Length: 220
Image (cartoon, rainbow, N blue to C red; front, side):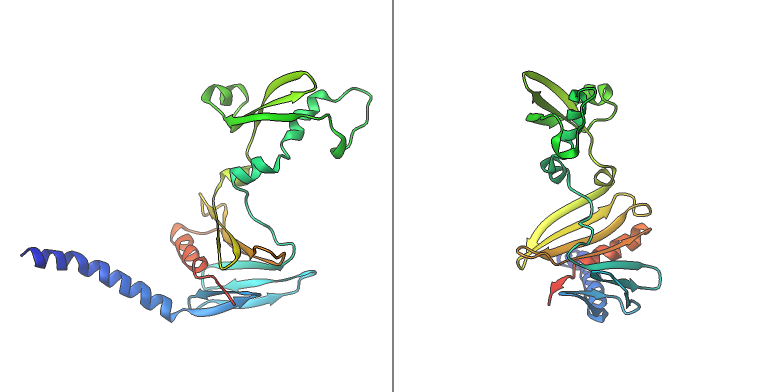
């Protein structure tokens, strides 16, 4: 009896795996630049005219992908760590020290040194109207706290980064698939030619299919 129950439990799992494996086997390979993906049979690659890159679409019955392969494709949403490391937000703290009557440019703003950073507390968020982090900075002898706000794009997407086969890979998944994008940005660890492949305006089930397609990426 126990053996029968175990077999009955495993049967649906085995069936699901078999169906999914069969689906993948029936998929076709589509290559963009130095990368290939497996797509369901209804998808077709459509090349378009690009100025300095290889661009186009991969269209299915209900999902359209857009791709850009070259030196300057969109690198997609930043992770919070990437945004904080970039430090472009420091200039926001510099503005308060600008002197009246003096001309400034982006490269010559009052210098602010970041001493530390931390996640914003509820009190911080109320004080600075939704700040995500708080930094402690120094300008000359003046030490002060100031808010850091993550980009809307970062907050609206789940972003994962990893490496495989000497490639840098970023997967971006919209928290609301109907409004954001789901896609991949991939390039060699020691190269500049990258591929960005994205789809947008998706249902939840379509987003799951897009994620499966992106997971099949291989280097030629």
